[in-house]
Image 1: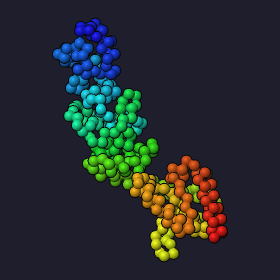
Image 2: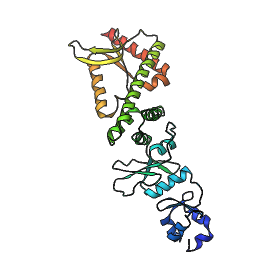
Image 3: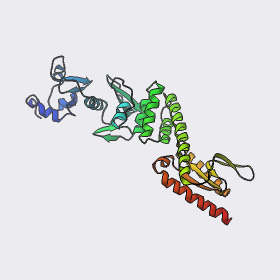
Length: 312
């Protein structure tokens, strides 16, 4: 765009913007003097200043999307949206009705600071962005916990974490993200996650009992501690069919993630095998989504254990 053409072609300026949001530096490249930019942002004039060096090409109230675009232009190309804004754009609704702010993550070496409706967090753990409708967002597990660290209410934290888990974010992912990040502000989220994990575990046991009733099998001993003939601990089975030496394990959310916990599960199964106990493992989610199939698997495992014990 030639010098002066911008005044005769306002639509041309708009095409170079993000929905009407543009930087002063970009306007200068298009031939608009910086003093002209700021004069046009004075009260009663045709443009509006949103952030230092970032303008709106009209004088009306900006939309939330325009405020997000302004924040990203202000922070630079490596910025990623996290916190409440990223949670909302990925479908979560259990968020407090606080004044609108855009929380951005930027690499540690960036010198940009927070300003007006923008909170800048410099981090050594810059996430790989998930792009939704042209907006770079932190993955949901990171966005949720970045928001939880800033919430002071146990009720608000619990509501957001519970909705995230219901929407498919796993408890192992949330615990791992808490452990990987800063410890600042993690006490309330960690307490809330433990309560959710305990509740999920209790719900899984109730669901397991419902599946067992569908199977028609004799009732197992629930939460039975098992020891070998020398008194050495084997495991505490979620359900144990003593007559056929069959252990039923409902894999808990907070136990089976990471190398350490995977190794513990393998070691437990090895102890079962050494003791001659058949083990059936079931994911908690399947107790609700596939109860009939899980009941059939339980019956098949019981029959296999029966045949094995009979052969012995």
